[in-house]
Image (tube, rainbow, N blue to C red; front, side, top):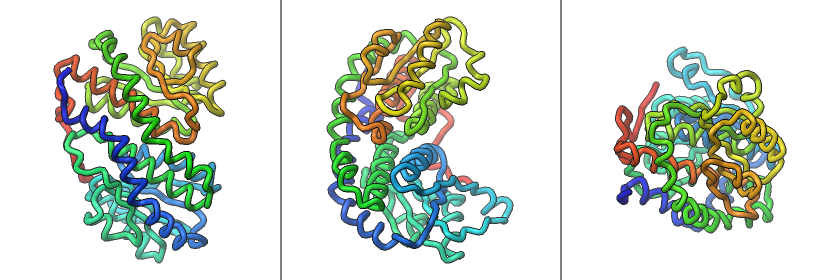
Length: 346
């Protein structure tokens, strides 16, 4: 594989998160002080990759901050013109470009109703940023590849900072500072495994399974597989997968499982053993040696990583797998057919 813009941007991610932590930490702390006591739930407007960051926020802010987090339905604000009552909400917009009209409309309506609005974006001069009270800059630099990578992981890291500062929790803040090192390690360990991706060159479909904090990771990896490789890739939680979709699994059916150490590991291990019995083709992202040894394609995570931060790291092997599979098929990882870098929806 020759070096591409996408590969360069995947490799940039540790530096991007280091820069975010250095430049935005104090700013995020100030934002959280200003917002404290002014809301009792969070409504997030996002699309695509940013929507997957919002799924992470549901677990993160629910777990550490005891805050209900809802995902907005932008069509109510645009197509139907019937926005809900946002009393008690902190309205949050997450968007790499900050230019999608439907996301902007949710934030603008929040301001119209007198609610505080916080935006996470890679363009602090965007229309979305102009609509908000507070803006967190992802400082990811230009993301030239169409598929988002560094803006996704920096969005997760920004949300982690928000959670830590809202909770005034120095312990989890200290754990966030370890993220760049974890990502460097997983990049180094994943690249040698990419030589085996040729095995999946003719794969036409697969499922991607995570749970808990990594429910978001399942969605984001499946999105990258779809965008970059033109493969039908469906995301599931392990619980939902057992409620019917497991009937799809026959011998050789590809299943990518995300199973880091943590509270959901026993559940993921039980599903994994069942998939082994069904003779599925297993791709595994994990730090568990006993599970990795049984995988057709093992993708190792660093040991000692807190489960709540694992989505920032566990997505990287999925990015690299998608990049390598696209390359093996002769597809452009930088400019996938049929999609654009900035997608504006109403």
